[in-house]
Image (cartoon, rainbow, N blue to C red; front, top):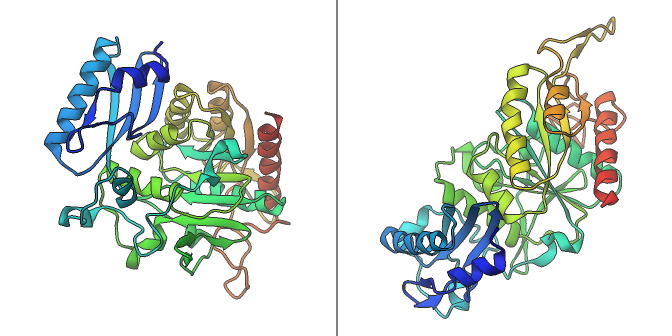
Length: 369
């Protein structure tokens, strides 16, 4: 299998079309991942020039084919102004860039912040599901809050850019602040939060292509001053699309939690998300079975309204464990409370205790390494 060092040597002759400089030497070929006979990488480019990108893509594929690599996944993203300046190239933003996601006016264009380097002690945990509607965001939010209640420094990125919901679920009504040119994430229940929801007005839909989503996600990593963190949770979109692949490439050390309902079909679909994690060498910490049952408040009888066994079977399929079976319920919150949120369970509640147990389990697994 080709190593990353060999990969860099093979691709060193590939030049940026306008600058005529090696993309490898400029460090504009990034997120390289080698898995058996498959290579995935991101190429930074000066402009959204389809012809130039096509020429670069063809050369990369040709050189990798000569090295015996036929299965190649390429992504392109436009260089930031800071990257252009580092490369000795500066120009005004074109009209076509106006549609690109950007945090300009909120502190974009900062130096790369090394705080999110996993080597600095940050544990990255992506929460994934095979399909929507299984409560993945609810699990992410409550796990983040449970970790914070245990004294951990926690960040949360709402990476479900099409279906962002974390700010509303946590009862956040303020926007990120900017201090000395740095974006400061909103803190709620001891969790530092960033979401596309902070930058979209009037709940408008996000209509973007995959590369634009990846660019915004990278800005969430690089252009936000997170401070010191112990855990960074990422609420991924459902399925195995572009954002999930970007996360796997950007953070190869990330671990994952898979969320499903007990229904057999939901678990079957969720297995794809788990399989993607395993194929990209990400550890699956476990499975959370949400909406596992409904418990009658009067008699205590449990009704398994979505079936039984899906979470356990999924955990068995992924060779991991079932972390929790969360019942169908609603947080006992009231809008008049100062810490009201629609989806965060109180620490003393039954479900709040379940999430505490999951958090303790996650901490034990992460510190064991």
